Length: 131
Image 1 (cartoon, rainbow, N blue to C red):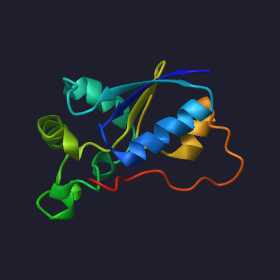
Image 2 (cartoon, rainbow, N blue to C red; image 1 turned 60 degrees about the vertical axis):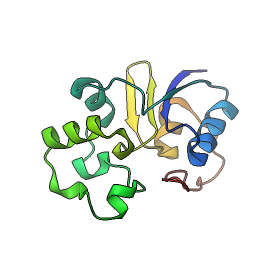
Image 3 (cartoon, helix red, strand yellow; image 1 turned 180 degrees about the vertical axis):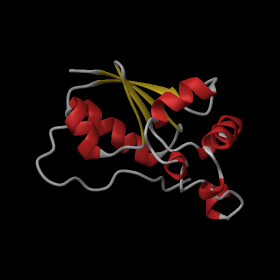
Image 4 (spheres, helix red, strand yellow; image 1 turned 120 degrees about the horizontal axis):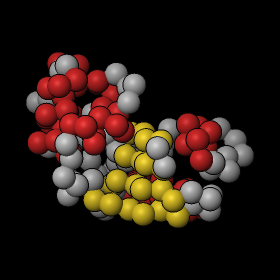
């Protein structure tokens, strides 16, 4: 199957479920620490592709939940700068397989791109119980 680079927040229960889904579909998962990666605007933007700027943000981040950061208040350049400065704000996981990149875990999209062996409509597997 595929070799999946999986940028996660270590300890995130939801990211663990997502990795298990990928491994269960036969993919080799190489987990990397999203918070320790030396992101640049160019490398991070590749994962965000055509998503609207507000969807670049992790809605479970304490700074967003508290209202300190409003994902709708930024243009692309300002959002990238903020995400690089505070990677906890980045929507996760970030997934790379060959030339394909995505932010977040849309099980239907991941199934279409690399296969997840979905038998029915999947349960949502985004968000994190621990922010």
